[in-house]
Image (cartoon, rainbow, N blue to C red):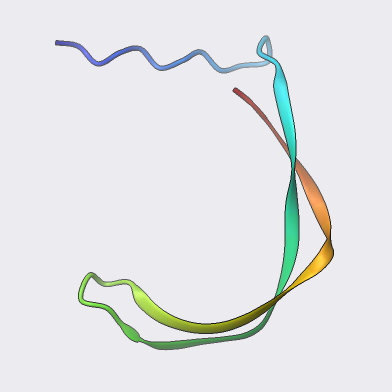
Length: 58
């Protein structure tokens, strides 16, 4: 059985614009590695109170 066709995305569709909040990494330290290869992190972030806008078509 064939996979279903992907939905059509393009400029003839309605765009959606959402905020992308800004954050500041005040501290980021790699503390180790997990068995699955991902890194363990210790971090401290602060949100800046401003944002970019990102637009996509869905």
